[in-house]
Amino acid sequence: MEINNICVYCASSNKCADIYGDTAYALGAHLAKEGITLITGAGGIGLMRKVEDGALDNGGKAIGVIPQFMVDQNWHHTGLTELRITESMHERKQTMAELSDAVIALPGGCGTIEELSEIITWKQLGLYFNPIVILNINGYYDHFIAQLDKAIEEHFMGEIHAKIWSVATTPEEALEIIRNTPRWDVSVRKYAAL
Image (cartoon, rainbow, N blue to C red; front, side, top):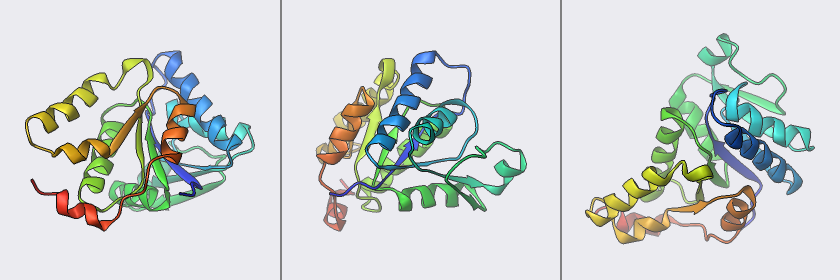
């Protein structure tokens, strides 16, 4: 499948270890070099800023989607290729999903984990059909992935649902997985209920 836009979920924290920011920047740079437009939450700090700058510094495009209340707080990156302002967080997440041909989740806090959990749920329900990659830097997502595996083991999710997400450890691997993961279709809805 053709990949034009990839949505990246990630932290807005400036206090995490350098390995996370360095990887975020490298991911943005890699997407730019591959001619892929970055879709983000438009944050002006933390990993979000790093991935955006990685794309922009390397000749790529970065589209940010952010609710008005965050713009009012000046929390947004002011140098993006395009800034889309929404009325709510829900509209923000919906817009980011609609614009994307795939999702990559870098490490992050509750907001990132919530976004990742929601897009996994949407794919389980047949509302989102594109690849989802967890970029597990420094083992950050080990416990989250174990929790997903536990949900399957305990029959809260089906075995087929393990195919909803993939795990990578480098930006290059994440993009390779996306390019080699088939797009789902509405037929997956028959597996939504156990």
